[in-house]
Length: 262
Ligand SMILES: C[C@H](O)CC(=O)C(=O)O
Image (cartoon, rainbow, N blue to C red; front, side, top):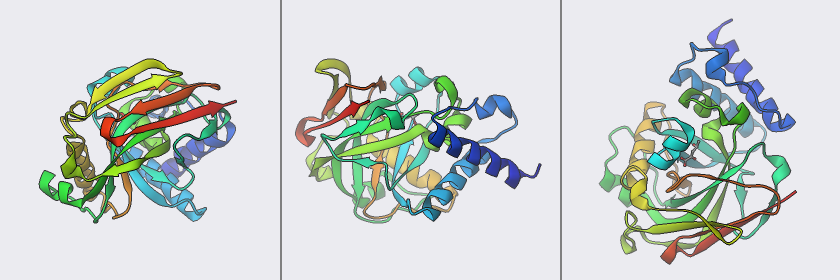
């Protein structure tokens, strides 16, 4: 099998898992020879397919940037994925749990970009200047890999396990916030479910933005002005089911909620 055929086959298998709701075996077990570049190529094939069907890239995610998430999923380095049309939900909305396989929720201190950002070589100062505002966000993650049995290769191929995003309405300038000290708390049905500060995300969510710009730069991709970047969860992800309501409190950035129906 050629490399192109192999990439197409795994991209199709992951695409089918979204439709059928039936997760697939870890690609890293099916094919232990897969590399990180192969995994990003499998991810890129799905992004191209979505664009062809009218679902364009509207933002970017960085995953596995906090120790809490790395420990939870047993993966010890960051990765990236894309946010496309159809993945965005309004704060306070209700989504059907039936469209997911094993969803979890994470609170993230997110950025809206006011200028393009193109690596490699992006510095923290350049990243800071490219940010037009900071917002609170919830990321919905899900795994098209059975039982969340993911290695780095599996989650990369599966668009960094992304499934959706809720961007809060309160947007503040970066310079008005101490994002490393910003404390976030997560509640599930009114009960405390997690907490963390911006510093949990690679020391600062800005470091995750720098990592993303420089890593995407090696693939020839520029972060586009106007897009949202979610830099990673400040605490472990919380599983959700029908009837649950999740609320994250971002202090000065307000709170962001999402509910789930059957
Ligand atoms: C597996 C996910 O990429 C984890 C994630 O979204 C995060 O760490 O944030």
